[in-house]
Amino acid sequence: MGSSPSAFLAYGYDLGGSDEWKIRETDEYGGIDASNVSTLAWYDDGDDADGFVEQAERRLLAVIAGFTEKWGDNQDGGYFDREEAAKALLGVKFDTYSYGEYPMHVLAAKVIEVGDDQALVVNPQDLTPDLGEVLKWDNALNAALEALGITPKQENPSWLLCAYYS
Image 1 (cartoon, helix red, strand yellow):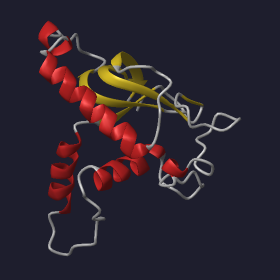
Image 2 (image 1 turned 30 degrees about the horizontal axis):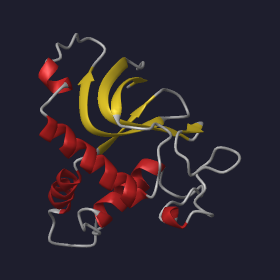
Image 3 (image 1 turned 180 degrees about the vertical axis):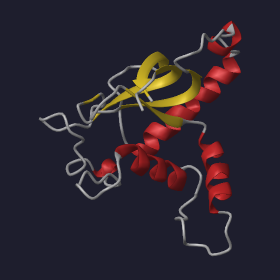
């Protein structure tokens, strides 16, 4: 099986990744500086730790949605339904772009995806919704950044066109 090129258009922040983090909380080598920044105490960059996105998502679920349950904690089932309901409260999601060993990450409030065999017609209203919708997106992004304790190098949320292989 080969890889297929795909792309997405996201409204949010480019956070970079392990090859080049695009946040201000980095050490002199460009890695996330969790040891010296108390706001990043939730992040573990150890070899046995989950990746950034998995840890960041758990942090957002706990801080914003109050969801701290782990799979297997509750024997009554329904974990994934509860997790999806909690994710819906966040108003943001992570998407990954790039290829190879060094994925890059976007924190987005709106994502429009297209596969390798598609031409997607984008409704201009999707890119320029009413001010109330944009404020909702911006507030969700700001809440997520605050919960994560990170500051993107990108000054404001923007539309980001990102390519990746799937």
